[in-house]
Figure 1 (tube, rainbow, N blue to C red):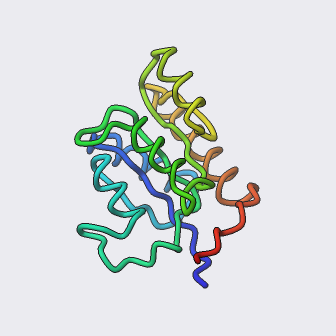
Figure 2: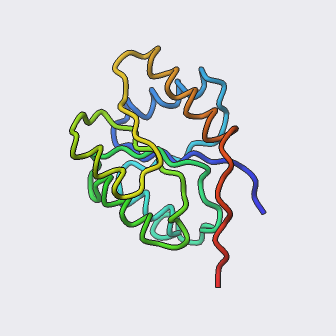
Length: 150
């Protein structure tokens, strides 16, 4: 069994990917970060398809950071599909977005998001938010048991 705690970052904006990596680094969170640049790449990673064919799909990320405004498959649709599959339904998903739309907030929680964080514009605030997020989901949180494969 693999005990590494991978962070799946689903983000299409390169600047936000770099910012998130720097914030994790500054918060001393050294976990591997797998980046999916669109919703399809994220689903391919989780389901072991496309570029990720052959990946052990039972090795799920410890936490998924999900942007909402994504190409190919929008973030809320990614979340819907994750929650609809028995293998990934318990996967911790934190929506990390700049969206201030109340309907996105409501839809995220309705679809089973574990948390919804608006990206702060200020780098220091963003760094603190990411550090706290990492500490909570990677250290303090007790992960759900893995789903047994039939």
